[in-house]
Image (cartoon, rainbow, N blue to C red; front, side, top):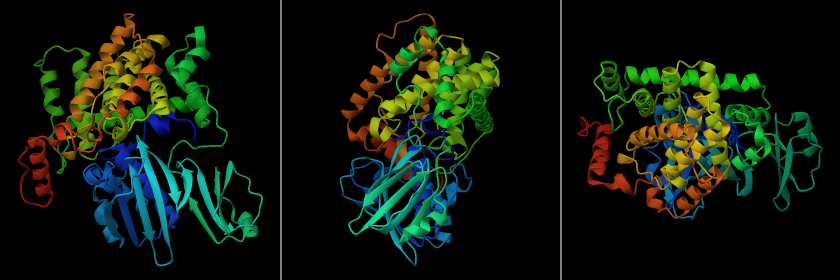
Length: 517
C-alpha cells in the first residue's frame, strides 16, 4: 500500500454527490471496471452483501449515481452525474442490482460482473473512505489496485517470459496460466508484449490525482514520528505538510501550495453559490443559508463573532452538496463543510491572504494523513466520529495555524477536538446525507474553534493525538453496525425520519409535494 497523500486521501476529490465513500469511490470503481471491458459494456450485475452498508444506502447516498457515471467514463464532478442512471440505459447497458449473503469483510464492497458481446469479467472492490478505493479481485484472482498507477494486466501461458521495466511486476499463478500485473507510470508498450504471446491484455488507467510509485518513502507516517524527527526545530505544521506531500507526490514546494490554493478557490465559489441559493428535488432540507446571511448582516443574530460567519459558510457548503453542486471531500463529502467553512470564514475575518488560507488547509491535511494512515474516514467503518470527528480534528489545527500558533499548539488543538467527538454515530435522516449531518458539521467547526483557542491559551490535551486516533478506532470496533451509516439506527429510524423518506420516495415517483417541507 502506498503512503497516504494529502490530495488523494485527505482533501479531495473535487466531486458532486452526497457521500464520497459512496459516490466518488463508486465512480472510481466504475472507471476501472470500464477499462477492464475496454469501454464496451452491454450488461452489468452489481451485488451487495446483505450485512454491509450498501443494500440500504446505495441509491439514496449516491453509490448508484457514482458507479453508473464511472461505467460511462465520467469524472467525479461531471454535471451529468444526477442523470447517470438514465444515461446508462440510453447507452444500452442492462443493469441488475442484487443483495446476496457472502459475508464480505468490508461494509462497502462492490461485486461487479460485466459483459459485452465478446467477454465476461468480474471485479470486486471496496470503498475505504473519502473517495479512496481498492480493487481486491479480478476474475477470481486476488490482487491490489488502488487507482494510483497505470495497471497493465497480461494473461499468458505459465512459461511465458519477458523483461518488463516497471515500478512493480507481480506474478499471479493460475495453474497452467499466469496473470502478470504491471504497475508503472505508463502502460507496457505493445512491442514489449509481443514476446509474451499474451492470451489477453487489459489496461486500467489511474483514477487518483497523485500517482503511486514503487518503494515510495515519506518522512513520517504518525504524529509521534513527526515530532521525534522535527524535535526542537518546532517547524510550523503547514511547512511539515509541504515537506511530506513534496516527497509523496514528487512536487515542488510551490506546486503543493498552488494545488491547495486551487482547492481554496473551488471552495470559495461553492460557498458563494450556496448562499445565493440551491435547489434539488430529492433532498430533506430547503435552502436556509441565505436567510442566515440576511439576519447576520442585519445584526439580528446573537453575537457569535467569527463563529456566525463559520456557521454560514458551513451551512452553504452542505447545501451545495445536497443539491449535487461541486464540493471538495475534506476529508469526506458527508463532512465536507466543517474544515473549509471554518478556515475560509476565519481567514476572511482575519483578513488573511489566499496563500495563508492554503497553508492552514495544508496543516489540516497533515493531521488528516495521521488519521487516514492509522484508521479511516469511512462512517460505514467508524461512525460519524470518523468523518465529523476527523474534520473537527483537522480544522482545529488549521485555525491555530491561521492564528500563527506553533506546531505543538496545532497538534494539541487536534487532540482536544477529536477527544470530544469520540462515539459519534452516523444516522442520516431519511437515508440522505443532510441531517443531522448539517448540525454535526456546524458542531465540528464550532468545536474546532473552541479547541484552537484553548490550545493557543496553553490548555493541556493530556492524550497524544496518535493515541486519540487509536481510541476512536477501538470505539468503532465496539459500535453496533446499525450506528455506522446503514440507516438502521439512531435518528434514521425515528417515525418522522421514516415518514420523510416515504414522502421523498413518493415525490421521486411524481406523486406531489414533499410534506416534510
